[in-house]
Length: 242
Image (tube, rainbow, N blue to C red; front, side, top):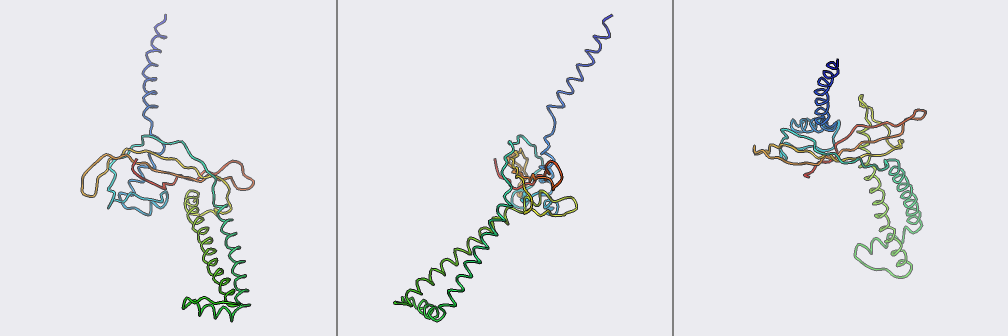
């Protein structure tokens, strides 16, 4: 009477074993990205790399990766997407620089003759006295501050330029349309992927290396009127020895 029941148990056991083995051997989702990266790097296919990487594994200097396996993935790190903040900082720096430049121009126009004498004195490292000495001190401060103001604008512009490409590439759609990053609000997510790689060096020798790849993506709020968030694609932004 109980043979069918026993039979079902015996039939179920292999199925459970297969399921357990399958779950234990599942491929991490990051592995496809890693293999695509090393394949394109080995072929020096910069056009393909440009779609998902800011770095490469140079076949001429680093060698080529014959095989790669993901061994661990760090927890995701999240920080605010700083493009809006940096764009605002650049606008403020440029506005402050304009105010400074206008003030400097007004001072120069008011003291043009004295400044001509100051410039001639500067060419011979001569210190002036009296009214011209006062103008010399003030003009030299204007000159020093000019460099400082220009440096502020340059630093703000560089910070924005460095922040934009990763977010833009992450959020670029399949048709190649680049979003206006400065208008988006959200976060930048990062994680590290540790990889065991078989590397063939340029001299032909082969070795096992462990590498750490950093990937990042932008996660932004959906467009006005839409719910949820928009997840950008993961971009490989760094690679180094473990």
